Image (cartoon, rainbow over all chains, first blue to last red; front, side, top):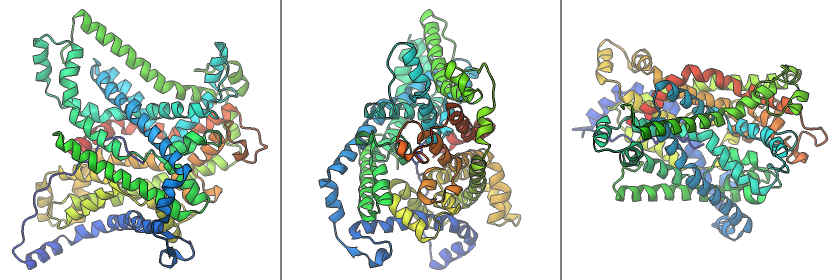
Length: 322
Length: 291
């Protein structure tokens, strides 16, 4: 799952000293032997659950049969990958994925920034903390809880939204089964769950701004909105760009759970995305190789996107993620 | 900042306050609605739609959901997985983070790169499933913990936090005859409580919210954690795919019952949250900003 909080940046490290002789290196290795012991469980974890699956990607070049394993299965070259681009199903789920991603960027992404600016302009620490506590809260609820809460609210039999619609003389809407309502529901849930939490990083970088700048701008007669525009926003530009890069990198990675929970036979046309399709085609229908190829495609696109956007951001003089 | 006492300044502050109050209200109202609905009778909920404070209090829904042991069992699984998982994850994350935080460790750049790389590229759902299956973890509770035992993100936050602890402390402990484990457990960890609390909360929330691993790796419904049960009761029964509900003929459960299950699945997090909130805000910022 993609964490929406802070981008971890790799610390610039001091260059390790050059060793005069290998015996000196050996001595250091021996002295730090306990540190290496400490790394063992973590390294094992990464090898088994992160790098072995990467090795497992080679089944996307095979017709993988569970009983024959990776070594026994037949090699088929790019067969599964070429199937991707001829299968109408795949082009449809790719479009669905891109549309949801576009909504994430255009609708969701600016909201935490605006919310952070608003929270920052709030006078009085009590209310600031109080509102923050309330808007952070949904982040700690699972997608199952978020989706469940909205389902009991919009359901046809007695959901409060439909009752309100009826009360004001409108006809009830079957939000859950109508394809047209899938995308609005999806993005509203994303906003409800993540917008508050997304403010943390922006608030932290706003807190680091030199108060003297505001003082000076007030001397020059700048009002509150002008201060936000000319001081606060430029100061958090770097953070905005960094988070934007991370977001772009997760282009095809919308998260399986959320969409899977909203998916049903009526809205499949607009709701099926790459992740849910990989699950259905792979684990439900047993097309291991084909769905692994889809996942592989997704991971590679993500990697390329992060590297590209990172490069671009460095070119325009920003820090980049790594 | 100094209070802006001009008219436009005051207007700005007032509008801003009202908007934020509305946003906060919209954020909590759905949940309050669900909590209130769970504590009333279904007749009351049907008659009086806009309950925020129930007129008639009732534990009917809770009595019903706790009348069989399905919910108890699922809660037990979730609590167990959360406690054991958080402890286990914290332990191995702290060990690795401390090892990698030490500047005199040869090869730390390689290790760091290998960790960061997993955040940029991964094998995906099916190959990971196959690894879990090959290890014989299918249908075991370990499958809910081991495959996600370390979050690279959390590990890096903790590592950065450890790096900010003055090296002199560690050196003097070494002179006093402490080995690396002693330094970690007696000096570094006690000094890192805000970070430990933050990361523990992150792990605990993740384990409590475990859903995907459960539907991927558990076939036996007796082992389901509360989140999977919640989906079964609310999402599948909410007028979608009636064929997919328990057996298609059972009528969907009452609104009040669905709401009660939501409350039960959310409550533990809401109870932990206030205790750790002051830590995590600080800890998350430390981790992210100094990174």
